[in-house]
Image (cartoon, rainbow, N blue to C red; front, side):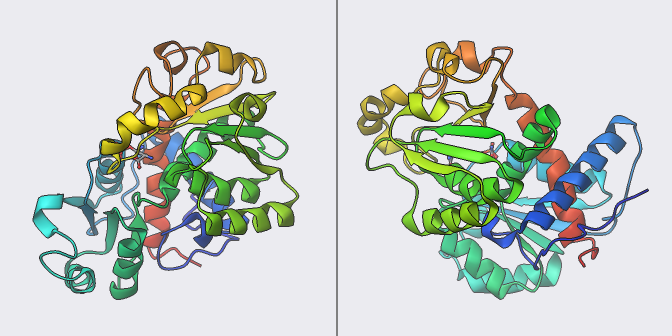
Length: 320
Ligand code: CP
Ligand code: NVA
């Protein structure tokens, strides 16, 4: 069988936030991504996006997001057009809405990487083509889909499993909080005081967790978060755009470093996740990042397969 649609779930024109997806949409996107992964391994080609162009409008640097989207488009028969921060100068050279309307006359979809989440939202409102959030200061939904795929490959069903996220209450933490309850994954987030996730996102995530009966806890103690967890996730202590806070944050975040000792508190063999890029020796040690429990390269690879699933649903006209 060749799956072409994300069946059973709601998927609108755009993918801006994990809040845009319900449990059925996540499940079917992951099924589709697994199918694309198996097809690629078998050496089979699928050119369902032939003739389609995806614009990549990036205000920040990228390795994984840019390359995986461009390769996904090319392997599906289409093409990607990368527009660096110097070219579009979103909201500076012209308004976000004008750029969206113009791009919609040329391309079939837009991936945007922005500082302000509001810029991705405005792009989507003005664009007649699908807009995908390729990371904003608030969320990173494509990354979290790849992370769920990675955990599903390791554990099969995620229901009843527990993930600990240790570090900054950032875009990764936000998208994880909104996603975990959809797949029944328990989530404990440990952040220093003052670096907790956004209260609005926390409220929505707690509602989702209550509805699905899954654990969602916000803590300060990293040991308590990691205790007996099936997986441990960390990310940079300062995100893109916050580099000038490095010196301020380093001492505050020291107790949140994922090292061999903290990892020992997790379930034996617990999977280690990091979205990358890593600041080695800060939020994670070399020993853990390169160790046998680390799944970070699978996470990075899975970006490609998940991106294909998202693109084929949003650009391929296969949406229900
Ligand atoms: N994980 C991730 O989004 O990596 P890039 O910033 O390199 O795209
Ligand atoms: N929180 C990080 C994620 C990078 C993929 C950042 O926004 O820089």
